[in-house]
Length: 374
Image (cartoon, rainbow, N blue to C red; front, side, top):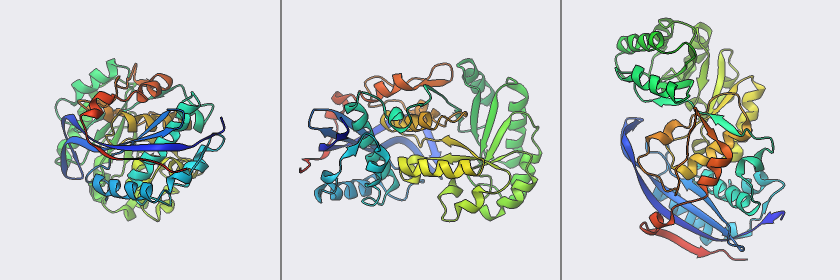
C-alpha cells in the first residue's frame, strides 16, 4: 500500500489533571487540556494526533485551534490529501498552509503520520527514518532547585537517568547559586545537568551565576538572558555551552544559532509548527555543529509519543526532554507510556500510543465529527 486516504475524522476535548501545579510563563497550571484528533481510513485504521496549546507558551487557545480545524474540515481541504508512504513528510507538508496555529499543525500532521503508520503496520519513527533509534534516553525534569532537589535527583539516578534539567531563575539569584553548588557537590559524578533560565536574567546576573558554578557536570545553560541581543557577549564569557529554545522562534534565529558557544537547539514540535518544520530546523542546527534536543510541552501520551518518534528518527546521541509525562496524574491511553532505566523503548511505546482508552473518550464531548468527501 503506497497511499492512504483519510475518509473520516473526529475531534474530542480532554482535560487531564497534573500531579502537582506547574508554572509556565507566570501561569499556574493544574490541568492539561486540549483536543484529540482521530483520522480513519476506509479499512478501519485510525491515526491519533494531539492539539494541546500550552497557556503562557502558545498564542492560540484550544478553542481557536478547534475553530480553524473545523473550518479546514468543512471546506474539505483535507479530503483531497493522500498520504504517500514513500514521502510522508511531503504529504503532511500540504497541511502547513491550511492552519495558522503551530499546535494545530503539529496535531494534524501527527494524526496523518500515525494513520499511515497504522495502515502500514509500522510506527511513525520508522516512516521518518528506517534506521531510527530503538530506545531514546530521557532527561529528568525538576521545576525547582530547592531543598528536595538532591533527594529527587538521587531517585532519578536510581531509575537510570543520567541527565536532569533544572529550571532556574525563579528565586533569589544567590540562593539558587548556593542550591546548585550543593546539588553539584552531593549528586553522583556521572550525573549531568541542564540549566534552563527561560530568559529570566540580565547579562550581569547570568554571568555572575554561571561563573559561580564549578565545571564538570553542566551540559549547557538554556536561554539565560532576558535580552537575546546580549547572547554574543554571554557566549564569549560563559564557561558552559549555551542552548537555544525561545530564540529559535524569532525570525532572526539563524544569526544566534551560528554563534560560537551555542551548542544545542531545543526543538519543540508543537511550538515550532509540526514535524516537517522540526526536521528542517534539525538540518540547520546540524550544519552549525549543534546537537538537537526534542522537547515536549506537557503533552498527553498521544502527543508525547509523536515527540518520541521524532527523537528516535533523528537518532541524536543526547537525552530528549520528555520527562514532562511524569507530571500527568492521568492519561487517555489504555496503557501509559513507560520509561525503563532512564530511556523509552520506541516500539513498545509506539504500540501503547495507538491504544487510546475509548471508554474515557466516551465520557468526553465529541466536538466535531463528519465524513470526508471523496
